[in-house]
Length: 176
Image (cartoon, rainbow, N blue to C red; front, side, top):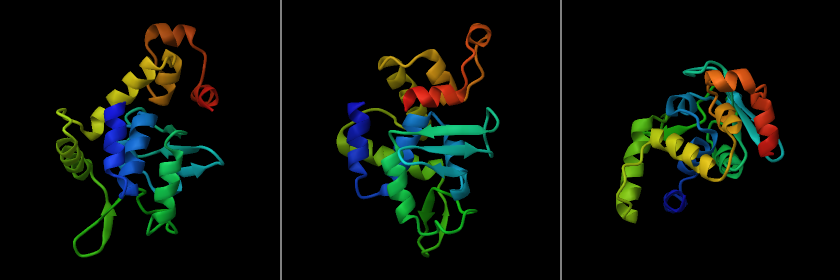
């Protein structure tokens, strides 16, 4: 977690990357799910947000929870140059010719490699490893299997399917 915080601080001048990193780590979303979200998919509340996944979701449709990453998401949203168009991608790259386009995980991975090298972190950090690390962090802080299962939008194991009657909304309420 300390290395994650160092990487986050490294990108202190880039609210887009900070928003992506914190949301990926917290929500346990897959890179393709997060990067295909559009402005219309973000449902903002006073202290949290729900990010609806309707495209490129391996587990189908549903929402990702945004609580700890909320300040970063809101900062990027306030700066988003195309926020008035609900059909635009939430995470954008600016090209050399000044046009905006969908951010790709390749772009983020390049930036993460540069950050790790600059910070002396000798680990290969990628968009997808943020999800794995987010799961590990949640396990270590004592999150229940139910909280992790629903945050990640996984179908349950047979044992959890039989015994766990909680919902994704229940997991969100526990987090709140």
